[in-house]
Length: 320
Image (cartoon, rainbow, N blue to C red; front, side, top):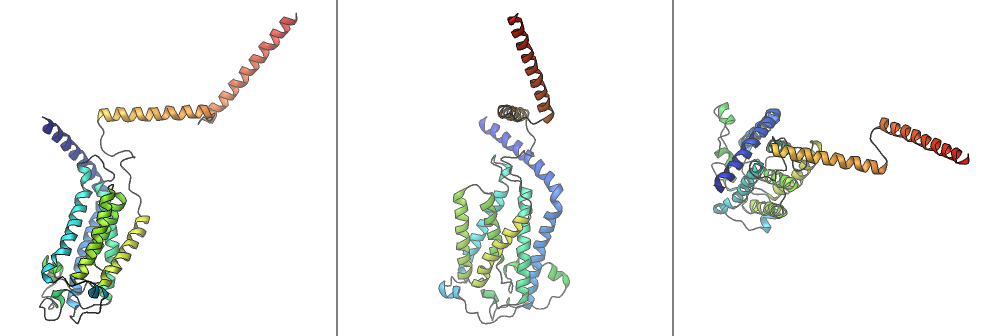
C-alpha cells in the first residue's frame, strides 16, 4: 500500500510537470529548434573540413612531451569520461519531473544550454576552417585510409555526414575541441543551477581529467584544449549576462497547478504577510494610502478641537 501510494504521488507529479513543460515548449519551441538545427550545421561543417584535411607530421606539442601516449587501444578512456558527464547532465536537467527540489524548468535550461553551445560552435567553425592542421589522432595520420576523403559522389552523401562513422572518425576539426565545449558548458551550467557542492567539485575535476586524457590519447593538440578552456568560459559568461535570468522555482510562484490544500496554505501565507506589512506601517506611522493619511489628520484635528472645547467648558463651569 505504501509503494502504491508513493507511486501514485510520483505519477501525479510527473504528469503535472509534463503539462507545464509542454506549455513552455509551445512558447519556446522556435529557439529550441534553431539550436538543434545548429547542432546539425556544426556536424556538417566538421564533416566538410575532413575533405580538406591533409595528413602530415605531428606538430611539436608540449602536452605530448609531458603526458605519455596512451595508445590507440585506450582511446575509450576519454570517451568514457565524456559519456558519463553528458548522460549525467541530461538526467539532471530532467530531475524536476520527479524530485521536489525543482529550481528550474527543463525547457528553459536547455534553451540556455543550446545558446551557449551554438555561440561556441560558431567560433569553432570559423577557427578550424581558417587553418587546417594535420590531425594527431591515429586515423588522421599518414598511411591511414581515413586520413583523407575522396570527393563526394552526391550532395546527399555530404548532408548525411556518414553518421555515426563520419562523426567518430573525423579529421581537421581541431581548434578547438568539441568535447570540451560540451563538457565546460554542462559543468558551468550545473555550477550555477546545481545544489550539491560535492558534485560541483567532482564535475570540475572530471573536466580537468578529460582534458588530460584527450591530449594523452592524441585526439587533439594541447592548443585545442587550452583554447577551449578560456573561449568557452568567456562565451558562457557574456552570453549568460545577455540572456534573461530564469525564474527560481524555489522562491517564485510556480507554474504547476496547485492542489486545494496548497492554495489555502498559499492564501494564508499571503494574508499573514499583508497583515504584518500593515502592522509595521502603523507602528512606523507610514501608511500606504495618502488619502487615508489626510483623513486621519483631519480626524485627529477634529478630535483635538473637541477636547479643547470640552476642557474650556469645564473650566468655565468650575469658575462659576
